[in-house]
Length: 245
Image (cartoon, rainbow, N blue to C red; front, side, top):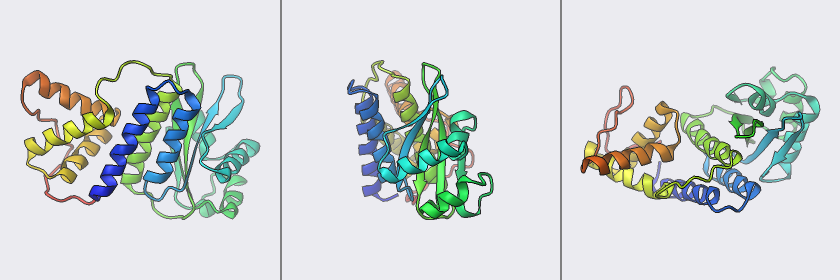
């Protein structure tokens, strides 16, 4: 990942964290997440959140454009599609080529004709019991990289938090925590900035908690011990000086 890309990602994470604690309301917070996801996640062009209410009604929140509204509504009307699979059961639903995926016999061909190449949908929860999905659409078909899935999960974590109306004090901002954690990991493992950021992403992926929590735990551990901590690296992790993710 280039320094410019990492800087934009950190800026996006901070914007999302600020939105979640600014009391601007659910829809503005979700809009921050969806627009940032469409702009930041590799290969993703459109994003939205589908929410299934306790009475069975489904609605689209924070769509990035009219295209995604129509794609979501088509799934609701047909009763099938990745966003419904994710919202109603599967933690992750994705397709790399909508035109060749036969899981949705009605939706698939019509979605491909609309210009949808691939689709990632991640299930969300909130404190009221409603469920939903973060929808990430790409106009081009093709393989979905691990980096894309990692970033997708980061934004899904934030969307789930927004739907849960979390308002507890977060301490340092997400960007501050990540920047501090990157510095500590650079010192502990003798890595450059990109290598340290990749390690944080990999620990985040293995730990199944938010990136903010991974970074905050590293910083808190360092403060408690008065020295740089040694977070357990992922299996087969080999420190490197330059990492392109």
